[in-house]
Image 1: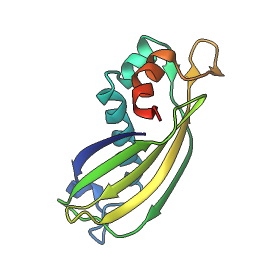
Image 2 (image 1 turned 90 degrees about the vertical axis):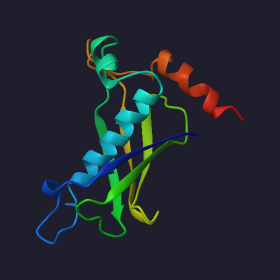
Image 3 (image 1 turned 180 degrees about the vertical axis):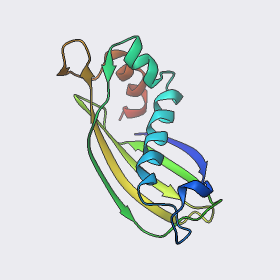
Length: 137
């Protein structure tokens, strides 16, 4: 399993009329989590697209809202890869507040899509090489 954490502070413009982090912004926080996880492996989304011709479109997104987050809260976005990717990669995400209480959780599934052929392809070997050490039993 590979785990990565990143912290984000809730900005005023991300809150709703009730002062809660607007529910639609959690999808963006999930995205920050997965983009930074890929970066922690020594790759970037930009490299995947520009150098390797691989896009990662979202296939599904599920989330549950446990408790609200508020303006200026420092949140920790914890992203986990529980299995090695194949044609798909699934990120399990948990968002915690400063008291380490779960705020939101879910998962997002993406596919590896080759820009040139417009087809779903297997996870690129250069990514799998970086992940395999975390999945040895």
